[in-house]
Image (tube, rainbow, N blue to C red; front, side, top):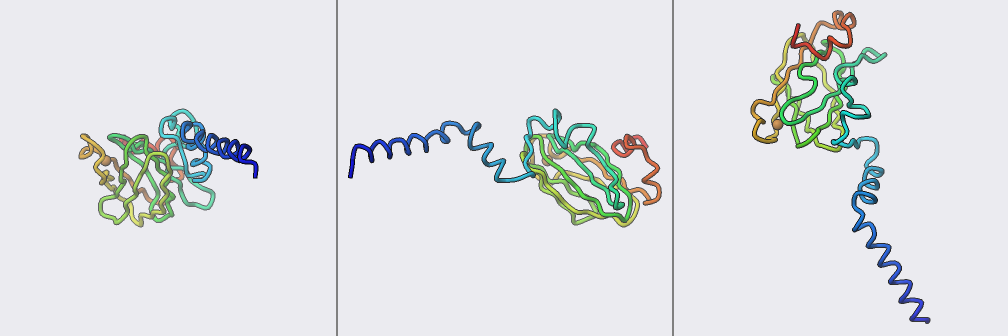
Length: 174
Ligand SMILES: [Cu+2]
């Protein structure tokens, strides 16, 4: 056995193992993103690129008649502040956080969606009848937590397709 070569080899392995430990953002974070798959989003650049840019938020009608709702939770509001969905159709919710952990709930229902920075939370919802639901945050997220609430307005199914995309994200004005 050549001890000198073995020692060099072990030293090289040790140094290679130490590199990831000193390059957390260059090696570990991209690796974790890769392993966690497509559910990862960067909370610091939500408004700059990707699925959660401002004009992509709100309700989007799918070809099969269902709708997809994209939202951001941040201290201390949900964006869009008021969303519209049609009654009686499946609602695919996709939401992420720009900062702390939040929980989106819908008063009068059992739905509660935990929202974490860095990942996309998904939920399947359905609201059988038209009406307005308050959507308070139920995870303490800071000083303004108790004022963190938005609204979901459920409109009759046949009324929804006539709405402009801009009207779906701003139902507070209606
Ligand atoms: Cu909160």
